[in-house]
Image (cartoon, rainbow, N blue to C red; front, side, top):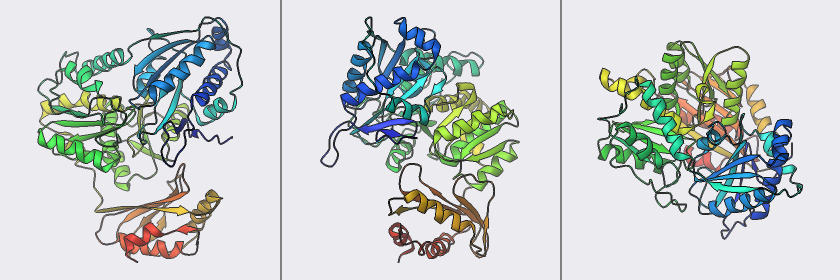
Length: 503
């Protein structure tokens, strides 16, 4: 597989605004080539090739609130029109909505293109691509970036603008009403706060929550602003979470919802200010999906707690732990269904979640909608979201450490460290066979009671260590023991570790 500088897994990412350190590489020229590669990729399908040759190939494009968005959309549109494509410019939109533009009859786009770099700093931008079948895979992106040869100019290309977020919001509203016996305002009497982090998710407060009768007073950072003046729009970021927690408590809201920039991820805050993210969010969504589909399987990434596994099994479900990366988790769920095992949910601890009933689409708004389908019923029963996860045991201590691999062939080094650790015999460390990423150990006396996972980072020259323990005071001895082991590999940088263990 070719490693193109603009490829990041199944996305395209690059620098769109120059900084003191970084030069722009996501240029108008780069965008022009991406358009050619995209049209060439779509034309690998004979049906789409005929549609293209007939001058009827339709591509929808939208963007998040980034400052570089409009100029990149402009460069994309100019080249697509030159090639004879019918372009629909949706303006400000979300990643899940762009996929739906390929499904809604009203638009019937043959491809949806979202200009976004998710939660990355303001100077980045990128592109996510969808066909009517779903998101482009890593190998599709490699193909698109490689096949950027100039295509013959075709007359008849056009561009029109359309609003996608209004029909998308109406679709969600309809689904939430349906789940609540068709009540027009099932959220009446509920106070729900949205934090859009100045990304593209601000529409959710008015077009979804208010339409369903909710009070959204105290919602914050709904206006799109590509300088992200308030906090990083990332539900996995501490400042961002602290900000929505404070707002929920201050306004005594029933629920807080925070989105990332392009709204493919969400995290929730309960009325007591508890964060529903990571293992807790997986637990709530598992509970909802297991009520609707008893016995179903749920695919997660590997760094989830042992407690979560027991929680899902106690509800009659099955957890499949798989390698990190949201496309990997989604693809595992799709493959599990193909193999004849019902699997309704694919979710990562980062908050990326995809439901089978929603095209296995990575969609933060749909996560919020699933919870909103349930909330009125909980209110009526006098229970809360906290009650849903009260059975999920929380670890006493958790710690994450990242080790930089200081060598050119860092992947080989990382794999070696992991392979060697498998052969170690250390009292209190038992290897857990239910693991497909890195190496996972269950930990018992003399190291307390818990687990740790050592794995390669998806895109960076790093080893990532995650440790959880149910007894206080044992994380340090575990870290010291692992530090001792790692000292045999001088190219594994232990600076971060030394800070924690106080060397």
